[in-house]
Image 1 (spheres, rainbow, N blue to C red):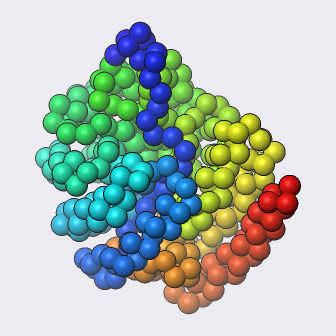
Image 2: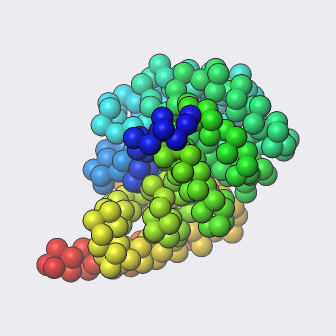
Length: 319
């Protein structure tokens, strides 16, 4: 797509798009009531979209049947109020396309694809893979950089090649390398319609200052408003208020220090939701949910955090 063709376009996906957890009651059973509550909870927090079946959603650990059930449930409940993005990353090309077809039939707005995991692909292979994938997809595609889990980066030279594909609408970057994120933003000179979103929550405001379009923030499952208010304050030019909300977001990160395994990020998020009565905290196998000692620690952190956030909100309302 040429500069002339895209100069009038703007990113389709902006603001806060939480990567939803997948509420479960047991091994292969959705917590349907909890999923309804979760969706209404994040929507009431003024999020700009929802992303299902990402890393926070434990997608690789879920059966294909359950993934399809969750896609259909989310699209039904959201009912067009915000865009729905669906993760289709898979080790199987055919299964990824099949999940994308399910997403399209359910009414989703875009699909999200990371690099295939297990066997690391070369960059030339990735270019060909995405080109072939785009030809089969019924929806726009956002690429997802998650090297800590997939072993492979979408290198910026690769993305520059892929920018010629009109169906690609942006990149979600969870690599945590802010210099790399800056190079992604340079691609917007060629594709101003691309959405470039940050994953790591502690980098949200930094990314906005650099010209990013928003965040796919796991903590927004629990407290969406603090993330959306941060983005809104920045958009309004109120950097002081945005920084205050950013400090709250950074303080919330303490829950991720509970537990000792890499899965603690999802465990803490589901635990927080469970403590708030929103959805079950059952984890997809082989992972265990937090037990009583960890739950108490998360509860203590959230109690303290809510007091601080309440004080901030009150002071801003008075101001």
